[in-house]
Amino acid sequence: MLSEIRRNPLLILFFILGMVIVGYIVAALSHMLYSQLVLNPGDFIAVIKDPVVLGSIWLTLYTSFISTVIAVILGIPLAYILARYEFYGKDIIEAIVDIPIIIPHTVAGIALFSLLMKRGAVGTAFSKLGIVFQDNMWGIVMAMFFVSCPFFVGTAREGFKSVNPNLERVARTLGASQWESFYQIALPLTFRHIFSGAIMSWARGISEFGAIIIIAYYPMIASTLILARFNTNGLQGSQPIAVLLILVCFVTFVVLRVISKRGGRK
Amino acid sequence: MIRVENISNNWGEFSLRNISLDIKENEYFIILGPTGAGKTLLLEIIAGLHFPKEGKVLINNNDVTFVNPEKRGFGFVYQDFALFPHLNVKKNIEYGLKLRKVPEEEREKKISELIDLLKINHLLERDTTTLSGGEKQKVALARALAINPKIILMDEPFSALDENTKSKLITDMKELHKSGGITFVHVTHSQEEAILLADRIGIMMNGTIVQVGTPDDIFYKPMTKEIARFVKIENIWEGKVTDKKDEDLFIDVNGKQVVALSDHFKVGDGVRLIIRPEDILIGKGSTSARNEFKGKVISIVKHGFYYIVRADCGFQVEAAVTKQSIENLGIKEGKDINIFFKATAIQVIKR
Image (tube, rainbow over all chains, first blue to last red; front, side, top):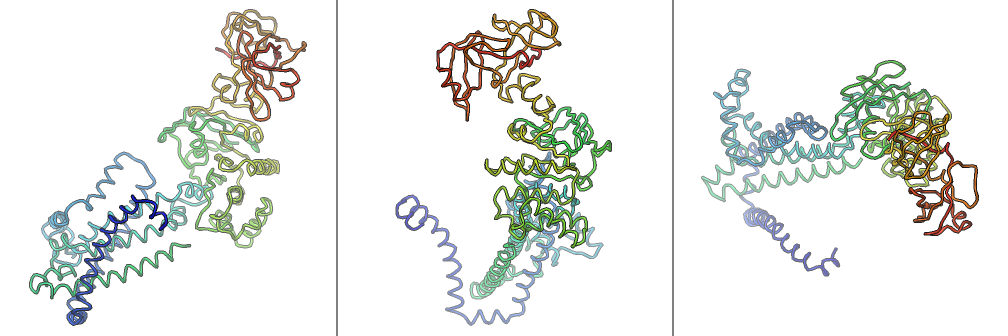
């Protein structure tokens, strides 16, 4: 690679331009981490002991996990259908599934709020069952699910597409029912995609903010708490929480990546 | 044993039209046709992997048209072998046995039988992704044979293999078929496979079966111009019946009179004459052949181990000639030669 770069001026130019992106991301994050952890560790240590902060981070991880579980359960069948079959209106369904990626988060929040609020079309029905979305954990879950499910469906769909359909056909001729050929052949061969789709969906849920504050400002997820503290105490109050959130996410995702690599190898 | 009645289907880019077939027990039946003729779709319909829009599939006179594939018990081998990549060779082979809840002892016995038969004992614990093409093919076959199928369906089973592996496997297939008890339906575009393996051949073109017969029927007596072209016959002459005596048919082709045998035509009928290049002889003296013409060599093209000599004798003739004949007879471009062919070697069809 190195010797190739020396003889290829275009590659050098591309490399420099590419490094601007990488540098920008690294600069923003490392500057924050450095100024907090090295220059001002006291505030950070105080935050680690603050039960409100820890509670909000736990809530964020937990609600996003539930939203991911829902995405996996409902998303695998949809992804399988989209990967395996051609039918009239398939393009429209694929476009609909991608809508949450392209609409602004606050718009998503408004749409969900009007549907799920206590007086909303669906909210009324669910409140009779004792499930409330407005200013409730379930509202957070629903907002996260809305914005993150396209990531899961998309990744799982690519996974099923990468499995040769003849494998399932042969399994059928060997005596497997439709269900057996699905869970003994297609599903294990898509495990890595499903796992990495779930990680992406979870990460997307954790990073959601705009849609959530509209439907459920309380209970406060980490991002809401960071904004609230920023508005009252500025950087000094908000940055330590941001740093803690980043570290927690970072460690979790690295661990999950390692597990997915190990798990997918066989 | 397998009866296909008037199958029609539209499925994506392929459509099948009015296909009927009767495949006998223990027969090695080859469905031969160009790519895109719908052969795979037909095979998958026989397997139950697709249900046809119209028509029936009968096995031993039982209608199985809409029976699920897992209830049919046919073996299936794909061109890409479709080995399960997350299972090793042994687990691939025993997949069907496990689904049938065959006890472990019996499974082991069956597997050792199969690996002996196909000589793949050394592969048993291997990862399927590390196998060569020929090895994959054998594992796919072993996996299909494990469920004791009465019928094995194969979709271009040799197309992904190199020539040497292919000819070895064709010999193996012949032995397997001879050992009996299994009806084979084999889809291919390769005429070589069809000649070497088939008891009977069904020619499939544009979504329908256009001719069924023994290899001799197909390669010497094609029923249409298109089939003749597909089996690489260039000698297709158009003519008109001018006289008839018993079975002898006298046909005018470009002003020359050709004698052929057929009792399906009468004087004045327009006909096509088809004859294989191997049945055209080039010589010096006369022979017992009833058709003899003088002609001029147009071109000589090398074609594997023989040569195709194209000559003009009032109409164009292609003859397949050995290298030795070319040298002995001194055949060269522009040279005058004598062309002979037997009346019995000519296939006469309607124009």
